[in-house]
Each structure stands twice: as structure tokens, then as C-alpha cells.
Amino acid sequence: MPRELLLQVTPEIAANESLLRDHLSKQIKVSVKEIQHVSILKRSIDARQKAIKINLKVLIYLQGEPFQETKIELPLYRDVSKAQEVIVVGAGPAGLFAALQLIELGLKPIVLERGKDVRGRRRDLKAINREHIVNEDSNYCFGEGGAGTYSDGKLYTRSKKRGDVTRILELLVAFGASEDILIEAHPHIGTNKLPKIIEDIRNKIIEFGGQVLFDTRVTDILVKNNEVDGVVTQNGDTINANKLILATGHSARDIFELLDKKKIFIEAKPFALGVRAEHSQELIDSIQYSCDYRGEHLPPAPYSIVKQVNGRGMYSFCMCPGGVIAPCATSPGEVVTNGWSPSKRDQATANSGIVIELKLEDFKPFAKFGALAGMEFQKSIEQKAWHLAGQTQKVPAQRMIDFTQNKVSADIPKTSYVPGTTSVEMGQVFPGFLSQILREGFKEFGKSMRGYLTNEAILHAPESRTSSPVRIPRDSMTLEHLQIKGLYPCGEGAGYAGGIISAAIDGEKCALMIAESLK
Image (tube, rainbow, N blue to C red):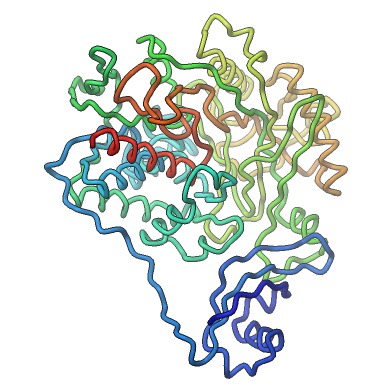
């Protein structure tokens, strides 16, 4: 029987198969020649001490023990071209994995995506970066693959209770992702590699009889006798079906407005909001690894930090080692930031959202908007940032210590944010209570991470699309909307997921519930 072993080794040993075998032979007291194969099951970094260690969980096969390389393969999909149709609105992770699951269950998905295919999106990303032009249907948030495609493809989730995380990771591997995502503690694919995987998923959906329609924004949801009857697109076309998975993402404000206008029950949901902070990666490495030089065997260091400030949680969000900051507005007249990293995380800077948890009571000034109060609160800050930055996609920016001292920065060095920056006192962007919490919180961060609080760090505002400001309530058992039969609110936009993995799991769950309802 192969033996499983938990161990700590140096980064050099973890990176070299020969050194690892030598180390294991001493651990289990056998010769190196007796070790047939070593499978790494889990890998993580322990940087709590000055001498950094790599935690490994391995499976060791000795000579004579049965071992066979296993290849992760896709499920046996069937042709569903003539099967019952299910409309899936949105081609992000929730929508795409819902479509794959529907095919596996013998149902035909019709995926409607308001934006362009994953390759076509690139021209619009270039336009917002270089020309400050925002395409409302094709940007960092909208288009094939959703928001995660061009903002890193982070796959880490704490939501194990939501469903089968391993299944989603294995499907991604079967579609071309590195098997490393199965063993890393904080897996990610990288913005440079994810588009090809998304494209292959779409081709598989089409190959087995599903449909994927781009540049097809839903402008109305047809309802008869409190049951879904289909949708209308911006071209005036009607697509009929009595099962609809609504997976439009956290930024589809027009969908929230449509539901509210049609009196389909939705409710305001708290979310988090703040800034995106950028440091040099070298500084973050020195803080996290307690060293002057990271070395070739350690990856660029991430960080995660949480503080309670004035009764509010303030924390790092979507941290991007070796990454860049991107403009993520979805409409003209607003500024929004996010971050991403390439697969090698080899950029010179590190960035992270630093956000504060909001409460429903914070939305009271927008109470007249009812369930859309949080969305309007969010929108007001993004629009204010746009005005402060000269009505362009330049971002309001400030040096970190200057911000804590309420002082406009005399200059802003060039950052990774391509559209550029405008020196602004951040207190003008946020309501007073948020600015005060951020100022105090950064001082607390500096106490926990010595060197983090520095005027070489640049704050970009706002980081405002952390999650949906609206929840679309559904039955906890059937996953149908509480009011409309056949409507399945899904993923981040409905308030039931927070990232690629949890959104994909939720998409699969909705597909399974639809199949169950049709039995």
C-alpha cells in the first residue's frame, strides 16, 4: 500500500524532485531506488518563521506497489441538440458550468451573453485602458468568461460547504488548466491562460448541441401566471423556455433595475467597498518572507490581513502578487478598480483591494431606491471618483501615509494602472465614516505588517465591485425564485457566490435542480 506522509521541507527540496526523493528516503528509511513514484497531494507555504518551509502532503509508491498515472477526463457528454431547452443568461463561471451540467443531464442550454467572445473582449479592454472608452456590454466585467477571466482566475475558496470544489477544479484541468491547481493552497490560473480554457468550454457546449449567443443582452424576462415564459433580447428577438438560470454577475445593474421595475422580488444586500493598494512586490516579499531577497524557489508573496476598526471589518480582498491594477467600469461616467496577475505573477508590483464591510443602514441616504439602495450608494461613489479624476478613466490616487494624514500627495509615481492617476485627497471620494475607518485601519495594518504603511504605497479608488449589492431571493430547497416559477437566480449576481469556484458550483446546483424538477 502506498504511504501518505505530511512533511515540511525547504523551498529548494520542494522544487527539486531528486532532492525530495532523497529527503523522503531518509524519512521512511528506505533507499532512493526503492521509491517508484511520489505524488504531491497538497502544497502550501509556511512563512511564520524566518526559515521558510513548504508544507507537503505526499503519497509514496515503493517498487512493486501498483501505480498508474491517472488522467483527468471530461464527463461523457451526450448530444442535446433536440432536448428540452433551458435559457442561461450570462457566460461567466456560473453560466458556463450550469450549461455543462445541463448537457451532462441531457438538457439543452441556450447561453445568452451580452458581451463578446473571450478573444473579442480584448479590443474593448484596450480601449478602456488606452482611450478611456467604456463599452457597456464588453469590458472587464462583461463578456465570455465573466469578470474572473481578465482579473486573474483566482480559484481559492473557503466555501467547501457549498459543494464539490474538487469537481470544479478537475473540470478546469480537463479543459487545459495546470494540474497544480489541484494541489496548491491558493490556486490560480492566470489572466494569460484562462481565455483559452473558457474558449474550449464554449466549444464543448456547442459540440454537444448547446447554443452560445454573444452580443445578446436580455432586456426583458417574460412571465405568465408567475412562471417564466422566456426572454426578449436587445434586438427585439424572443426566446421561449420555461426554465431560466439568471447568472448575470455582480455588475448587471440593468438586470436589477428590470427585476425591480417588473416587481420581481429582490432585496438590498450589504457588500464591501474601499481602495486598491499597490506596493512593490519586492517590499511585500521582504515583509512576508522576512528576507532581503526572495530567491528562485519561492513564489511572489501574497498577503491576507483582517482588522476590526470602529466595529467594522476591514480586510484585504482579491490580493494579486506580481500583478497590476485594471479599470473595471461597466458604464461611462464611473471609475472602478480591480486587480489581476499573469500565471507567473512576474510583474514588479503587488496590489490588493482593501475594503470595509458595509451595513444596510449605510444605504439610508438612498432609501428612496428601495432594493436598489446599495447599488445607488455604490454608483454614487464610482461617479464621484470619475468627476474627481477629470471625467476620464484616470483614477483618484494618494500615497498611503498622506492619506492617513489627510494630505494631498504632491506627486504620484507611475503605477501599474494604465489609464493613469490623479492626485486626490481620498476623503473626497468616500463618505466621512468610511474615510476615517480606512485611515485608522491602515495604521493598524502597519502594526501587523512592518513596512506595509509607507508613502511608497499608492492607493487607487474605488474598489467597489467586491460582491453584488442586490440579492435575488430563492427557495433554499428548489433554488427557484420565491415568486416566479422556473426562474433560478444564480451565482454572484444573485448573491449566492463569491468567486469563480463558488459561482461554478452554484451554476451546477441550479442545473441539477432544474433536471430534478423535470423528472
